[in-house]
Length: 621
Image 1 (cartoon, one colour):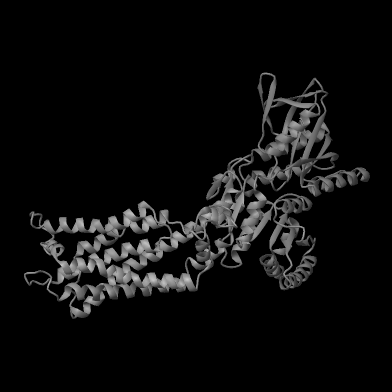
Image 2 (tube, one colour; image 1 turned 45 degrees about the horizontal axis):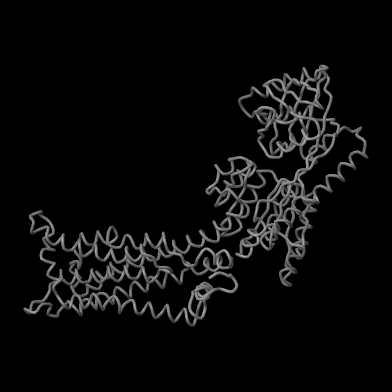
């Protein structure tokens, strides 16, 4: 424990602190120091430990670092007596495979019992072994090690092959266990995400017993959850078990029994082949949760790719260590947790968070808000453009399809650029369909928003609404300013007055429509919507004077400010948007009153009135 590691010590006065590549390695070194074997210092070729106040120096000869494939690390040192010793630590299944044939079976059984006891308690286990190396053998082996270290191609594979030659006939020393504490609010977060309809998978490199214990403590499974253990050694056994588990899962689903699948990394090789892959996929998608243990980084990525291939699923992978990088990159959305395991997972992710429980707000709150806002912005953008440009179609019936346009060209170009640019932006930034407290308290709303925020029927409704509004805008505008006398002197307006009036009513209707679609109003939203209407009038006044000022353009708009002195024009500005949006208001009122969705019921339940001052379930004003 105090020798076989890559920890770096930092001495400050009489205290020694350790910098480790992983929390587990640092914990082992600190644990060894507590029982009298203190790691003191490390140089490139030497390391010093203090064993009960006696300093012992070891010469470092070769280091075979830990990786997720080998699942072990080795350090070959020369003691002060001149002996060569190989110290190895790693996963139990890897170490036991490399033990000497002369190892006492009673010692092996004792170690396995301790490992099982530790795993059942949810502790992360590790085995330690050593081996005395003969100088003659070392000389020959070291030449191969140097050649592999200097290799340009496939260096890692060659080093692993050379390590296999020396990591044999080991002598077991003992086992260790480290408590891997869960972060705060992990069980609450997992329960909330599962209530939101999200399927949870746990991919870990720990032993099966450890993985199951962690699943229980994190609320991924409960005491009533039936566990289906898939731990076969051959393909035929895996296929038989999968067929049996598929039938069992169908029975559980029919009778409402909660169940989860536990699968080992060795079995996955067979589960991904032939007929077994289809059965494995069906079984996984029917489980409440899936626990995969003894997983390598490549297997984690393969699991993610398999889930993505099963259907139209969005897969989110979250991890905190280098072993999770492949999985994070393979997922649709990758989330990395910064912390004790380093920053490699966070650097490879789409989103980086400091604590696991931040995922609850990231999905349930910001995910829901973002989905609702994005859907509204997209639907609103289609709506406002179709509303404006279909008016030209209705005008074509009156212009005998001569090609004459109703609106002046610069006003058409400025519609999306200036006059209706801010309402969708503000709608996408500030609208909150429900407060964050409600969304966190009621996770089922996450799935409800996915069902109702955007759909084919919803899109068709907005398209039909745009057609209807364009038809009303043109006909009402034609009714008010098309043929009627607009001024007291008996004059009537021409096509450009009709176009500018229709454009004014369209801008007003579209901007007020954005306020009608907002679930929450604030000063910024109201200012931007009403300010867009005011911006059109300022543009109209300035643009209509450009030709009079001798700027050489805007000849068609010259004198258009006369429209602002017409009483019918202002009467239409007051009444036409109200008449058109009154239909939308009635539809919303009828739908909310008689056919409310779960989302709308929740809004009404939390809307403070003199009869409903607070939500009893949530418990806040």
